[in-house]
Length: 106
Length: 106
Image (cartoon, rainbow over all chains, first blue to last red; front, side, top):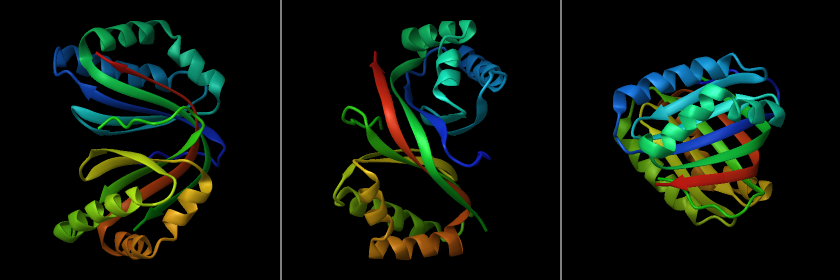
């Protein structure tokens, strides 16, 4: 759940989403496939996810060029279209440069 | 759920957490109180949350000084101590400068 990331700076894509609930089986398949594809992209670091119908997914990347390449990836483009057409009632996406990070383990 | 934020730049605090499950009633009270207190801090913009025992909370702030002031707030310091002592098995906190943002509503 908690991603291991390198020392900053690196980049975070914070994707906050509200699902329509439609087409749930296809959504689940596509979501798993997108994680698999993203992880194979150059510059991918890791991903964290929480929630269900209301969810936050944060993916971490080495740089902005890696994020732009992932946004333009073919199968991902098709998923983005399906997302707007069927799966998401609303979402927000924010691209942010991580400047400081720390963690805790009990 | 999806926070309204101004045009970038602004700052995000991405708090990813895994709960111990201990002391759940006190945790719920403290979590609600922290949202109330944070919202009253100078420079607070808004907050998004998803998940339960594994959760991601993203709070948005105007600048780094506002984030530092919130970290040092008295009642919040006490909650941070309780969090490490009882509530969290692990967490990661990342402070990031939002450079680009967009959204979608069906």
